[in-house]
Image (cartoon, rainbow, N blue to C red):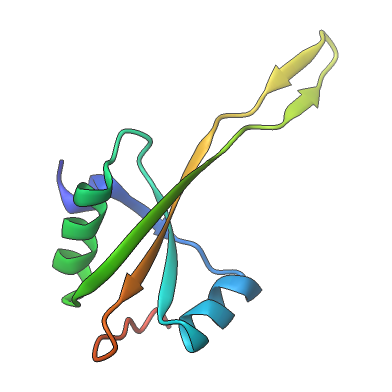
Length: 92
């Protein structure tokens, strides 16, 4: 997979900003089929940094009520990427 297909977008929240400053960990929305190795290679190639660890999670889509019944939103895969101490990503 191409790196731009693996990393969909960086996740910018208050918690992710705090983790980037204190733990050097960044959050990304990633493709559902992407493995940890794919994510590591994509981040290293796109941002020119050295990745130390990758953790992933799949957030289940919530059930939403519509006129005709309930519909489940799509699942979202997130990755928490920890960088080496000498690496940093400038998102802004």
